[in-house]
Amino acid sequence: MHFEELVKARHSAVNFINDEKLSEEDFKKIFELTKLAPSAYNLQFTNYLVITDEEKKERVKELSYHQYKIHTASAVVIVMGNRNSIESGEVEKIYSPMKMLKMMDEVDYEMTLKTIKDYSDRLKEEPSQLDLELVRNAGIHAMLFMLSAKHYGFDTCPMHVHNVPELRKEFNIPEHLEPVMMITIGKSVDKTRPRGYRKPVGEFVAFNGYK
Amino acid sequence: MHFEELVKARHSAVNFINDEKLSEEDFKKIFELTKLAPSAYNLQFTNYLVITDEEKKERVKELSYHQYKIHTASAVVIVMGNRNSIESGEVEKIYSPMKMLKMMDEVDYEMTLKTIKDYSDRLKEEPSQLDLELVRNAGIHAMLFMLSAKHYGFDTCPMHVHNVPELRKEFNIPEHLEPVMMITIGKSVDKTRPRGYRKPVGEFVAFNGYK
Image (cartoon, rainbow over all chains, first blue to last red; front, side, top):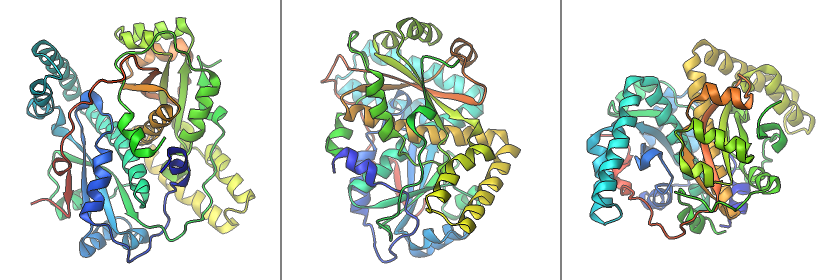
């Protein structure tokens, strides 16, 4: 779809057509685009847990104040930040293919790894900074996910994630993956709902400083 | 531009053509699309400070470890979360036009305001939760900004924001606006740089739980 059209067509869905299903292939197409999102030092912090199984989806609904749209959605997607992304093993997994493919020379490779090590040390010193970094990167990633989904014909609704310890237990989510938000996905019941009011640009953008 | 093409064309720029300028009109076009990003309860938390003035841009460069791309960029854009977005005055500014335009009836309006009040009270109880909420929403918003910029022909690079207290003083940024990240914008010098390595989808996506 043309980008402007797509952005205007994307609405947060209020409710979904219950019998519409997404296949793993649909998800793969969406993620093949989503994975091109930028991330700090290209560390690709964002992981996804896609829940399509009906019973498991009901369990997420129970843990999410019984929000009905989780029931009608084809799937609920848990967006997570990966705390291990700043560990040297993970960093090398991303940068060594680039060295191998001659996208970086040895000097550039060593310098980059050193810069990332310093950055990672700073984040570990102050755990709240790592939390913020995971969330910042997940937000960026999740927006591209929602646009990609719409591009392939699916509607989404970004949601808060609740009861994380129970969710973690239910789906055996490893400790290094931190749930940041959820996205329900499917086909919207209502194609014609008007968009919520948006502030004019002048109210949220300033140029060159404040008086 | 067609969406897939756009996503594939968007790269983080390493350096910019120094004499390319963006006008306020260019920025307005970009923000007219960006403002359609979703936000929690449509509270539109994200604000932007656009710095085009050469001297002021040099000052941001000084405060950002002298990163050269800030010098060559047409502008540097500071992406900020607005702490006041959860205050009742701001909430009413967004929802009362919707009631006036009959997009909501009186009952729906009162219920929505009550729900947002509960949410806002919870965020105020735990300030770190408000920080995370601002960053989550800013990440979502910033991704749409970067895609919209590319759609209108401009390249971007998302960056960490440094030395926030000095930046705040320099540009008189009010206390309720919290800098979350920066984006340099302009026209990239290098159109043909290969994209950084991306993990295959199977490495960051799981279905229905973990073993």
